[in-house]
Length: 65
Image (cartoon, rainbow, N blue to C red; front, side, top):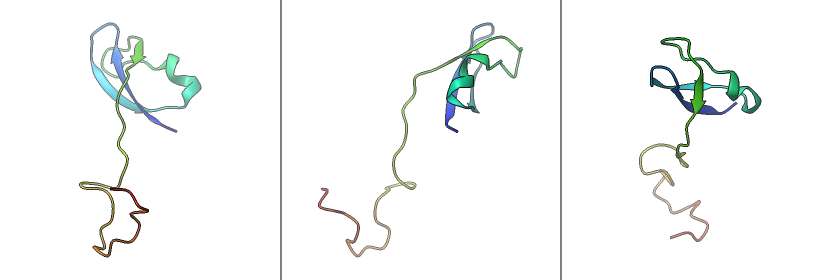
């Protein structure tokens, strides 16, 4: 299940929640109980700061520069 960002329509509180795609419309604000709407957000690719190869051997670059 993906982690989504939400914003409450009642109080404006922003929060994240792990929820199935088809259940996004039923999410309620944990602060006031009001209806929440999913927000557009970015996502990260990689495994932490710097991402990419951590061995220093150059393996795994697959020709990307």
